[in-house]
Amino acid sequence: MKVNKGILFVLLGAGCYGFTPVFAKLGFSYGYSLGQINIVQMLISSFLLWTITLIKRPSFKGLTKNNLPLIMITGCFTGLTSIFYYGAMQYLPASLAIILMFQFVWIGILLEWIFSKVKPAPITVLSILLILIGVFFASNIINGDIQGLPLKGLLFGILSAFTYAGFIFFSGKVAVDVDPLARTSLMATGSTILILIIFIRDIPSVFPLETNLVATAVGVSLFGAVFPPLFFAVGAPLVAGGIANILTSIELPIAILSASIILSETVTPLQWVGTAIILAAIALNELGGKLFKVRKHNKVVIYR
Image (cartoon, rainbow, N blue to C red; front, top):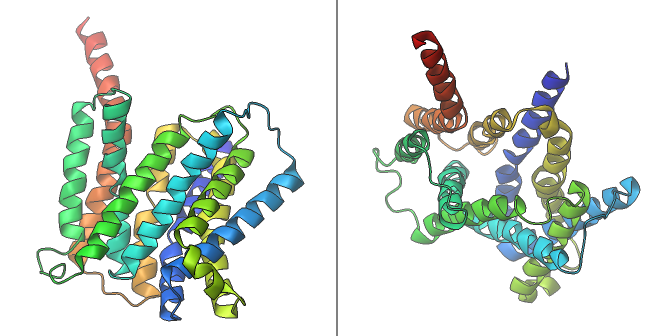
């Protein structure tokens, strides 16, 4: 029963991420700039997270003057991801932007290899190759639909993958003994400060707050920064790490499906094939090594 509850909450958390492109695209359709959307989104996210933190009153044990700035700097990666990810959506279909951002999977493996000296296993290398094949199909290069798309949008999409991979990598290394809720709020604060610095010229244009801008920012904040961490905090401890990572990949098909249904973007069968290959590659990377070890172990037992 606990496992089912854990799976449900992890799926809900990942599913929420899949709807953020809808709100971002909606904001752009209203004529708001990347800076305006990011500023209001981060202010709302920080306010909501700190409100929840103060209500829950988590322990700040383990927080020091040394790791406090590191936590906030780690949070800056989420701010950069938001800039690049939504920036990509200004120029590209949401379905392509999410596919590019999802390259954080193999980029994260690369970061582990470079910084932690963890050499990828053969099964991981195979998974990376499958992901790249999946991207080839999902991007619709074969039909030539990617030709003529702004290079700036493609660059933003790839940069969002690098910054998101960086966030995942460093968030697993920095102040891991600090309460998750307190850490998330501090990360949001660091991200907010970065956004305000980068888009300082857009701050005056945000006020007075318009209803459409607030509605857009609230949607992006809730589905991108508030609900997912809370759902993951409940569900992740009840599910094995590998399974949790596979479950979070549901964000990809939900984002593409929402772009297709809500934003009326055209998603071809070939793109769905590419998406399926990417999901299969993620599952292979998470479970393939374990299955291989089990089979190898069983083979040795039988031989003896």
